[in-house]
Image 1 (spheres, rainbow over the protein chains, first blue to last red):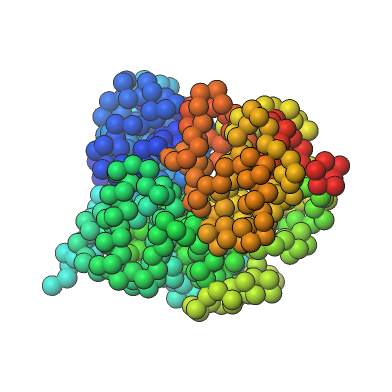
Image 2 (cartoon, rainbow over the protein chains, first blue to last red; image 1 turned 90 degrees about the horizontal axis):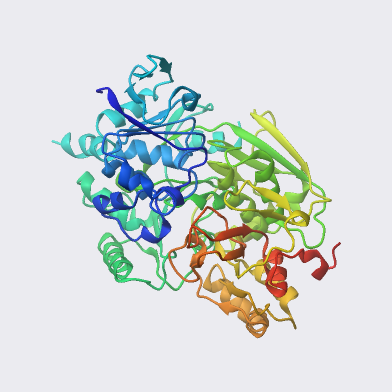
Length: 168
Length: 419
């Protein structure tokens, strides 16, 4: 996998799925359209200031709450490069992997990175480099099985390859 | 092994599994609600025509019923056509109830099975001893295609609850207290098992509250070990096989949490996180504009009964509106037979049709700017029920009913022979 490089937007702890993607938009299932409503209710600045390729750095338990996949879809189709957090809620974590949205569990990350920093993530080696400070922060890479889903671009292409493309 | 380990070992064809290991488990029940449409779209992208087993897929409409918008109406229509095409017989339309309640009533929630749902509160079926957890739509598309799912074997926390619950204090107060103590990520990725005399004494409905709300401390699955009460309920309702799975005597737990609830006060989760929990004594007196009794957490018969007990012969405060949403039509009908609905209507409540109602902020009873709600539902996140400038306090159905009477957050114990 290629390294992911981008500018950081910082969020606090316990950013829940209602905050990431409001319930009133659950009827929207078109991924491109979900991308118009990221953080809309509580952090309206995000849609104005953030750009595709940017990286979200968050505190503990990012994505807690509902299983709504739109909370991961919206950020993926907005073009967010990766989400790095101290920890994630489990359903959000799975959703991101399944959609091929790069996700990194990196305890301590919020102490090493400030808003506006440019960071570079090596998902395979488990290293984040902060270009401002030159610091290298390490994390445990995803388990091989999961990284494999990720290398294929998510669960759907992974399954398509396994179930359909390989059928003679 | 713990319950989670034993079920996952069986479901993945292994003798033994250990926490941290990734297994591919066979799924017994695959449940989706309106978001089945997203599952369908992902499923179609895989390129397979037929779902793996139409008998094992359950679709239950509950989030926005009847349709609140044209978009939802189209979505419902598309899904009705899909279940017909695929031969999915276990389809429950807008006239059934909230998915987690319907799963129980229709005999899908049962001991020893793997139940996967595209809804976070799928942990509810753990009250029947099922390995039951929530996933997103893409994960479910994989299940529809293969009948399998990858799962990391969770470590288990044993929660032991002892003591007789005081009058006016219920399972909701117990689990809110635990979440308050342990935090919103206190059980993140873990399996939890509820043991102890308090849990054994609890009704099935109350046990469902424990398993349901365990999600709000991050639990992946939340078991109440099945006993004779479980089997009595399940036997009467299921036509599918099940197997009681109990933890081994020498099961290894990551942690043991012990609680004595004999002096517990009613508990309130204050805005904007479910772990911001305070005893009622610290919150009493806050004015409320909307009181809500319902949801997959607390819309069952015993919840409506206690509300009626408090509201009988009384009126909802003039500055407050009370919304009541029975969790299913089975409950609705029984509440009608028992005269509960009449008591609530006479008190000034608005009875809504069974479904998620205002809990998810998409339909029926949205909060306005600056409004305050007391609710028996499961989440108080900022903006969840409407305006980002509204406040949601979570409590038991008894606390909500008492608060509706007084127009402010009120200790229900004085209406129920307690302190």
